[in-house]
Image 1 (spheres, one colour):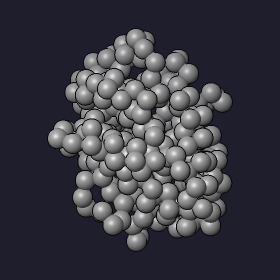
Image 2: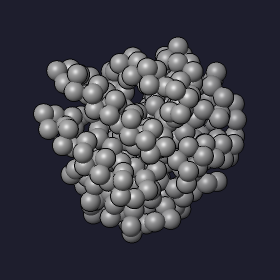
Image 3: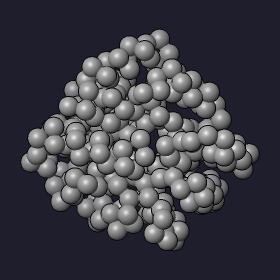
Length: 255
């Protein structure tokens, strides 16, 4: 069973002491491909170094996380643009809007997202969207910009059936992670109605570890637990989920 973790911060400091071992555990668990979202200028070196050391398994994207949008966000975006012009990346991301931590930067976050949407169009790359407490604000910007060329994924999706339908109408995919295994995670409300072609699997490690590891550091080797939960909700086998979501990720990220 081959799996693709479509969103993992495996380069983060939380894996400083055992990154090699964690990647080996992932491979042993069938997670042969890991796509890494960027955060801001501080994460680029670690992410690219991880990709260079594990080029068959780890693939970098380039973007500015909404929680890193501050007064100097334009400088951050120039750096993103510069890197996108230098070499290939799997996607523009992660980008989006986060109103959980700070509502005061909404206007700057919206502007940063619009710039990254334009960069995705310019470089013909998918978008990886972060939408914490800001689904509507994010979806509105994507809807306004959608001219048939935009594609990507609403990562860590745990919204309503109506929101899931809106994502599909926009031509985007749903990234399903550890929240799907939580008792009140809400995946049982929307997932059973979604066709497999619209789904990606992700860990978002080191965050949001699936049950039975909830509350601990997450890692890509836990992805089979998420695949099993999705299989259960869709009435399919874990192998079917693994195959379909891996093909979806390969097609979206051109891996």
